[in-house]
Image (tube, rainbow, N blue to C red; front, side, top):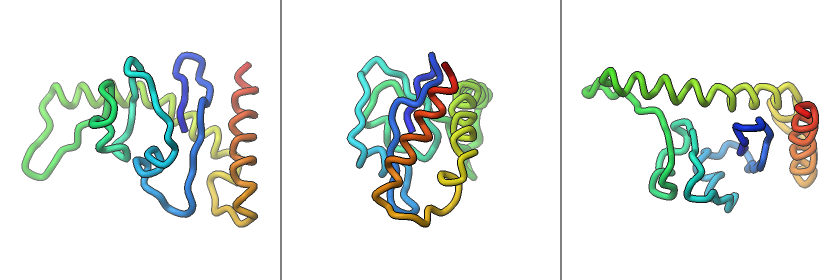
Length: 125
């Protein structure tokens, strides 16, 4: 799901069959951003920095390399900007069709998911 942070509207949606990695879904979606667009992503999109220049992702602590104070502060800034996106995901998941297993015809899922996004966008205005 792509969200415009200025007006908090859902811009684009994409989904896959079953459990699919976030970055794999992005590659299949063929959704592209301009070079000036800043992307605030979670660690599910690791590897995105090779495709786009303005990517902000939190840095992960490893067993042998602890995070510096600068890294912790940067992670906090990123998480503060991403909280808006997480709230939008929560609002969309209020519709149980998105949060639970979809048991109907697969063809209609795209229509229903886009309608849910449109309802969310309509509620904002």
